[in-house]
Image 1 (cartoon, rainbow, N blue to C red):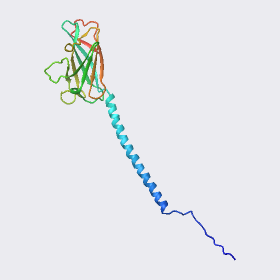
Image 2 (tube, one colour):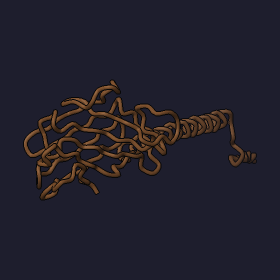
Image 3 (cartoon, rainbow, N blue to C red):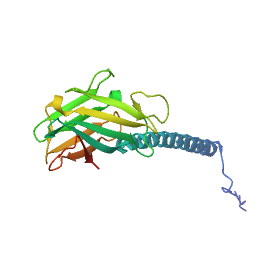
Image 4 (cartoon, rainbow, N blue to C red):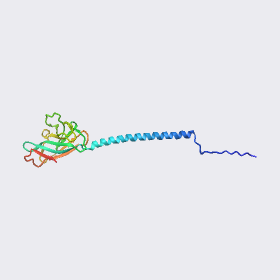
Length: 201
């Protein structure tokens, strides 16, 4: 008579040390991946904010031209000097005019001007004058700040770019940061007896 040997196999609870190691390794990998993703997203957010601020600074016009008044010569034949009234645009940041470059363009040539730092001297062929006629915040200086009203003077006579009747000139004010301000000025058909001529607005 043969004896029957019955072996029962139960694999439902087969959780060994190998499976446990793999499970822990998966948790560690997931944690490391999550930490890398969080750190990367933080760095990207900081760079995006910095880039946004720089882009806003580059495209924003910090100042505006309120008016341009020309001074005519003794015979009222041409405009020999331009007085440009400037102020900060809404939300604009302060502008250091010692770093500003101004270009004046007429129909035949271009002049590049920097700041005249000697307050006792007039504007020249390569230097413009900067004067604050109203001081908003701080003391009068070469920095256009909130509430300030400044006049920039260009000596067209010294630049050999006198503005005759019906002729056109272009003013480009290029700050250290932000977009440049461009303004076209056109002389009237006749100056008459006026020694001061409103060219803009």
